[in-house]
Length: 360
Ligand SMILES: [Zn+2]
Ligand SMILES: [Zn+2]
Ligand SMILES: [Zn+2]
Ligand SMILES: [Zn+2]
Image 1 (cartoon, helix red, strand yellow):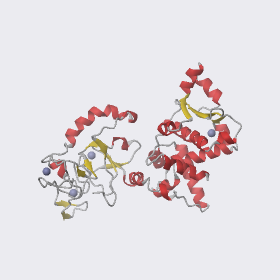
Image 2 (cartoon, protein in one colour):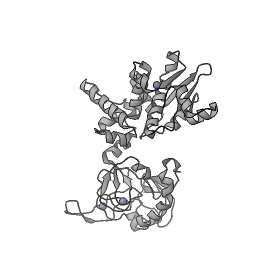
Image 3 (cartoon, helix red, strand yellow):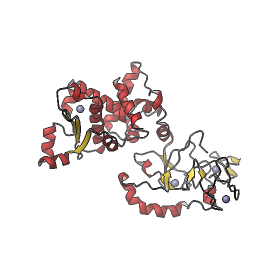
Image 4 (cartoon, helix red, strand yellow):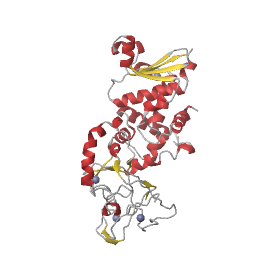
C-alpha cells in the first residue's frame, strides 16, 4: 500500500528525529545521484536559469536513465527558504521509491506548480509520500500539535506544508480515518515525542532539555524557560562524565576502572557511582517544605531539575560549573552556529531526556 511506503522508509533509515537528514539518506542508494542546479549548470556550461527552463521546474526534478537503471535528482539549492528544498527532496525521493519512471514513458518528472494543479497521479502520490515522510500524521496527533507554527518548528517544514498536513489530518479525521503507525515503527519516536511534549529552552544559558518535571535548568539552575523554537536542540551537548546508563565507568575518587555490573558503588572505596540531587531538604514550587529530594540525575546535570540544588557530581567536582563550562562553550559557539559543522566528539553526549522511568 502506498501509505506504508513512507512509514517503511522511516523504519528502513531508522529515523527518530525531524527534520530528516536527507542528503545522507539519498546517498545510501547506489543507483541514485543527487546534484544541485549550480553543478548541473557548470557541467552543461549554462546558467541556472537555463537549467530551470530545461528541467521545467524552479525546485527540482528526478531523471531516469533506463538503460543504466540510474536515477538523478537535481534540485535548486538557491531556492528560499531552505525548508522548501527539504520538501522538494522528499517529493523526488517519493517518485524514486514508488518507481514512477517505470510506470511511465517519461524520462523526467518535473516538479512545478502547473503540474501540481493539474490532475497528475504521480505528482499527487509523490506529495502524499512526502507528507507522510516529513510530517507523519500519527506523530502530529500523538504530540497534540494543532497549529502550523508548532508543526513548522518541530518538523522543519514551510508554512504551506504545515498547513496542508494539518488540513489533510482534519479532513481525513472528519471522514472517520484513524492515523496510526505500523507497530514496528511506533517506538522509533519516543524521544521525539518527549521533545514535543516537554522541550524547553533555558532563558539564561540556552540549554535545551526535555525532562518531564523541569523546574530548574540542570546546567545553570535557572528557573525561567521558553518553549521550544526551531534549532534549539542543536545545542543539546554538554560535557559530562563517561558513563553507562548513568553509572560512571570509572571511580572518580580512587580511579578504579573495574566497576562491577551489579554494584552501584565503587568496590574499592565505596563511593556512590550515580549523579543525584545533593539536597535533603527543599521548598517545592508551591513553597511547601519537603525532605529528601535525592532525585536521580543525568550525568551532565549540575543542578537538580526538580529542586534546583546542586548535583553530587558538581559537589564532588566531577563536573565543571556552568560558568567555567561557558568559557569552553564560547569558543565552540562559532562552530555550533553551523549545525553541519558540528563534529561529534567522544566527550560530548546528549542531554539525557528523562521519562517516567529513567534508566538509572
Ligand atoms: Zn514530481
Ligand atoms: Zn540554564
Ligand atoms: Zn573508588
Ligand atoms: Zn533535588
